[in-house]
Image (tube, rainbow, N blue to C red):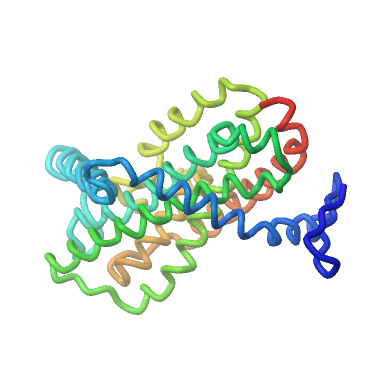
Length: 280
């Protein structure tokens, strides 16, 4: 099947195309990616009473609960001279981005069933655009981080320059399993119940409210198979600077698992996307 806008710009769509050709096709649909992303952002904030304030209120309430439970009741320690509330916030922000991105990406194809069943475009555009809203929420949440830093007079150091790289890996961490669950959700609708379970359990098995330094050495390798463990450590190192030193071999292991999940998600999504219109 061929679609052409002009004699100079011709798009060839083939089943089973090479990864390079598929990436080129996705790039040609970057305009659609922008449209879907902007649509999702407008829908998220259009008819809400508090608008973008929800992106601030949600992490603030969660931060207050986790700080009271784990600091005041469980009396878990912080790292270095950094206040415990900063330790928790630096774990909470990447976790909430991952949780929201995973949920939105997993249900994105089903939510767009009308356009999926009527027109062709690389279906990968849909889950990627779903992460745009989560990215906006995350950027708004950084206002909380800046405010609490100012309150405690805590000044980040040069490690903050690595923040864009860490944010990129946060996007990839949500995209990999998000693609896998999005494809499975089209064929097996009960997978929509898997995502809330992952989110509910993941916040406890990830170092959101505690430091990975509390994990016994004999369990660390196994623990860092959770990609969010390394990602949260990297985010804390970026924001807290010299006050937090991660276990770098574990961060590297988490990164490898993250990339493996991303490759698995992309491959499975590509292998099944041609049947989305029939199964949706």
